[in-house]
Each structure stands twice: as structure tokens, then as C-alpha cells.
Figure: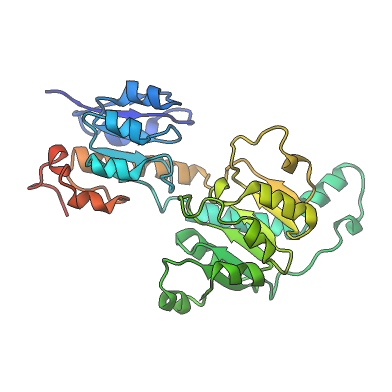
Length: 340
């Protein structure tokens, strides 16, 4: 009997011990660790795969069209922008993510960036290490209480941030066209338009997923509406912000500063102007990380594979719900045994 072939397209961990711990529970699965970077490399390795675990390798329509046996794709993390969801659904392939593994880590990191920038922690540290023991190098610093924190997106992570930020005395508003206004009110949050958020916020923290609709969402027109020279925090995806527009706004003082964990190009280009700007703090896409979060993410990604291939049910974190109604699903998993 042929084993199910499960391929990890790409990964940046020391080993695959968490994935192995889950998938080796079944003797029916063969786990293959790959190092794919291009569409052709993915096709070569995954053409006959039954399941795929993905990090950054592109799973485009071209790739989907070439897959012969694939029943499930899971992705490390929350975003699924590496995967062509429409093409996967048309092929009857379940796509799953891990949406709840790093809520504390990312919300903690966003709050840490806010505090580090507002309290001038990086500036003070640099000056002290240069021999300059003088608090005046940090002027001006303003208190956080009563400032307005605008959240772009109001999913799990910004909700966690809101609870933590409330303790500092922030007034919190949010933009999220998909979140029920009544539920937001129950949480003590006012939902506003993106334009209103730009006009009223002292600090803007970005938590929107990267989709065609959100790419460049914070761009030239929106920066022009900002009245309080806000601080911009981004712990979601780099391309949600138009970096050229942000750079121009920082130079002109329309935006007072930025603290960015993500960039449009990662790693950041060594010639990028942000690297020489005192009003920009950069971290290397680390907001998601803790030892516990990494273990949870990798374990749950593997469990999504097990759900479909071994347990014969939809994965817990199914992203493309439309696949349930797709006729091609019957080619992959028995319609009589699938759990709905």
C-alpha cells in the first residue's frame, strides 16, 4: 500500500521534530523535507504529494495545476498569501493555516514597539553607550495616557493588543469592515472608517492580512489625511504599507516615526533608507516568535495534514471553506466519510 507523501516545501528551523512527532503517529505517512524556492522546484518535489506544509515557497496557480494527488495544504502561520486559494479550491484541495498560535507574542511585540519608540528607549540606549548620560537627548517624550491608538484590523491579535493597551490609558478605535460593530462596542472599541482612523490616531498599529484589497492600503492618500503626525507600527505584512509613501511621509514629518517588524522585501535591502533614519525602529520579522509559539505553530500545521489524510475530516483551521461545496472534493476524499 502506497504511503501518503507529505512534503515540507521550505522551512527555517533547526529540524522538523514537531512535525515528525505528529505525522509519525501514522505509519501511512512519509514525511519529506525539501528546500523549494521557486514554482518549478515546488512542482518537481510536490507533483505527486498528498499533503504539503508550506512556509514561503510560492504555491501559485501554475503549481496547483501541476499537483496530481494533493488533498491538503497547511501553512506555517496566519497568512496564506503564498497560496493561490482560488486555484486550490478549484482542485478540491483544503488549505489550512494556524490563526491562533502567536496572539500574545505579536500583541506583546506591537506594544513593545510602541513603548520603545514613545519612551525613546533605542535613542537613550545608543546615547548612553556612546558616553552621553543626558536625559535631554530624548526630548520630547509625551505620556501615553489619553492618546488614541488606531488598530487597522480587529482580529484576534489586535483584540489582544487592545486589552493590554487599555491598561496604559489609551483611547482605542479600530477599522475592520468585517467585524460586527455591536460586538466591537461590547468590547469597548469604536469601529471607524480608515480615513477617520487616520485623522484621529496618535499611534496606528497595522494588523491587516495581506490580500489584493489590503496591499498598499496605507498609502499616499491615507498619509495625507493624518493630522496628528502619528507613529506607525506594523507587525502584519510589509506590503500592506506603501513603503515609498511612508518614507516620504517620514521625511516630511507627516508621520513622526515608524516601528516595523515586517518589510515589503525581506531581508531588508542593505541600501534601504530606513536603516539610517533615527525615527525608524526595525526588527527582523520576529513578532510571532517565542519557543512556545513556534512549537504550537508547527504542531498545528502538521495536525491539519493528519486531519485530512488520516482522520478523514476537514482541518480545524480550514481557510477555503468553499472547498466543502466543490465537486472536485469527491476526487480527493470520500464524500460519505468527510466530517462536515
